[in-house]
Length: 336
Figure 1 (tube, helix red, strand yellow):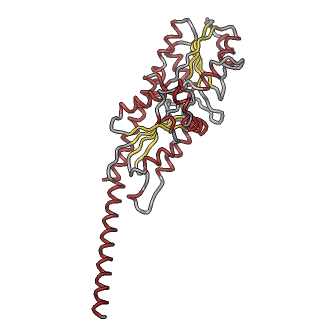
Figure 2 (cartoon, one colour):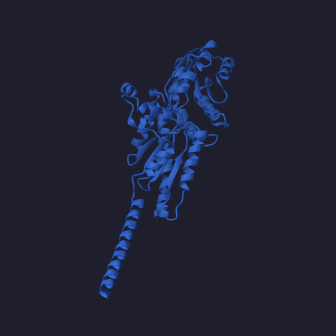
């Protein structure tokens, strides 16, 4: 009996030691997994669009970023709940998918930035660059910045398990606050083809931005001043959500010296989506095109988003190049 008890105790000790060793190995593997260098990731966060013809503008930016950062996984995210919902519905619409074979599956599977970041983190700790595809730092950019800041502060008892140890967010096209001169000058250069087209046609150039009903964004005024300095006084800029609107631009244009009788109307937006198609170029009486036509002007509308302009897409590449060393420095400090 005593011998049997000793044998059982010996077996129990062996099992406990084996379990401890196994747990230690699992822990080592888990720790190695959490800090094993993973391929860095880029998340491009845009408001999104439901217009099939507007998608190439977003995809062009994605392609330019992927070419500039070949060692990174590049993901798209749409911040609009409504737009994502429409694409989810279309994912189950066989007729729609058959009629639009060029739409990549990632658009049907599109998620918000938080969901994309969560799936990236599931693969282990990695460096993540989140790039805003907005023109200014309005509400959409502000929400994205707060999301990244909150996730970056997400801490754990064991530092090795911190889900987002190395992450940052890239500025919108025109920079932060009232705009940054270098960013504005880059935007002015990217808009040169439109200004040249308007000038050669003897037309004024009228740009329609999105604007923001809650935030005063003086950056539009600074951009307009820079455009006029570069291309002459017959350049105008208004927004959908805040003044100046089409009526105010029309009055200013009519009162200007040597006002042309024709305008070239174009969106100052990443995509030529619903705002451009309906609010800008639509046939309704309150569209910008209709307002200018009613004012006696000949109107040419350009339905091409800024994302289709390689120079504008390059602005986001430059912002990512400025962001990357800052986040890489965080990683180096952590690992040093």
